[in-house]
Length: 317
Image (cartoon, rainbow, N blue to C red):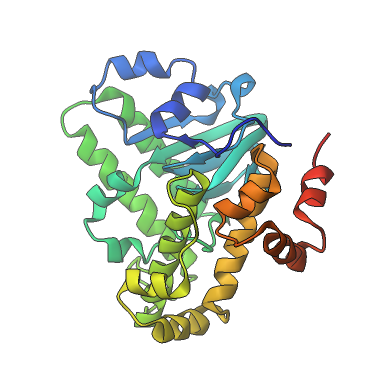
């Protein structure tokens, strides 16, 4: 259903925690006055009456570890149900809402990209964490011994976070790094033994850098910071490669063309704008870089077999 907003608003880690945790501000008064980059909470401490049912673009990573119960959320317009013994990694820049929580027990862990870089100091290493990248698998059902391992790691993080003794920050960063490396090993399905996943080639890294650049471009579009998506040659320039080589790398990894990936991402943002803003069809077409609303309508109908207005009206109550 549409709202009276022109752009989908952003939400930082502090505003998110303040919205869903009743005692968050009291806890923060006992800590540093610097902007938070990390926090962890028990899911049962979340105030379900104040769940964020309006769409926001989160600018931080969130990890949900469900021990009991279930939760339902909308992530990039897709309904996602998380159940007991599951873990889910949510990326910055995604448009999300919470919908429902049923007898939840477990943990919710949030951290910024800046905090992540304090752990590894190497963006190339981060690019090996598939579950933190666009289009990577990030929902895992945990069997033993993984379930016991995650319970131990989250418990250690949760115990260390509120006390803030000497070296607590260092301990938290180490446990978080353990969480990421162990998840990479699990995600590698036994193909990697060093926590860095399967063997990487140059075209893998070009693909991952392109996907991150693409996501950032569309985050900026959603928030009104830029006026159109980048073209293939502009993405190539951002990555310091030729358009031909970029296209070759993307096709080798994904089997798709660069343009088809950009088109699909444009379609997703178009849907989000139709459902979560009050902008008319012409305004949305302009925001997405289309020369005219008629071209935008043809583009949308090619994928959805309905016009943008028909799509919007189908979700109105």
